[in-house]
Amino acid sequence: MTSIQAVGLYAALNILLILFLSANVSRNRRRAKVSLGTGKDKALEQACRAHGNTIEIIPAGLIALFLLASMNAPTIQIHIIGAALTLGRILFAYGILKSFTPSFGRFAGTVITWLTFLASSVLLLIAAFS
Image (cartoon, rainbow, N blue to C red; front, top):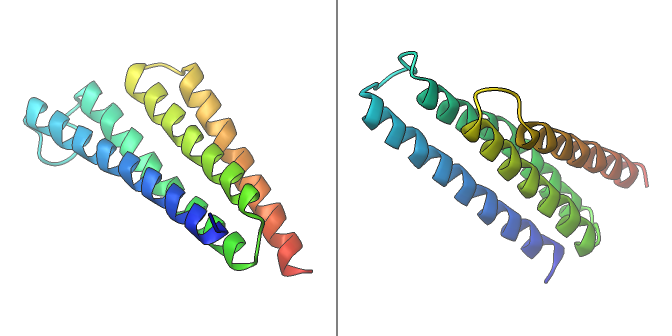
């Protein structure tokens, strides 16, 4: 597998996560009979935040992976960062969907995601100045 194929793998997995979370928002909207906003429905609010946070984070992570692959980063680096990004987003979504209060999933997902962003940034800076 090339590094760009690895980016494709993690793009596909994260797009599937977005699709799952989008469907969950739609399901909760139908259940709560709310077409816009959350109507103060806690489960709908959780679903919206899990989806919204994912939409806010994933594009930057995938752009970083693509840029690393474009700068000839080793495939193993793409796999490590891509797998960590995906795991972090899954943990975060699970944590926010399962608990109204702070949870291990939210905490671990946030930390893992931030670490992937930090690693990506450092590797991109190194590649840019090499």
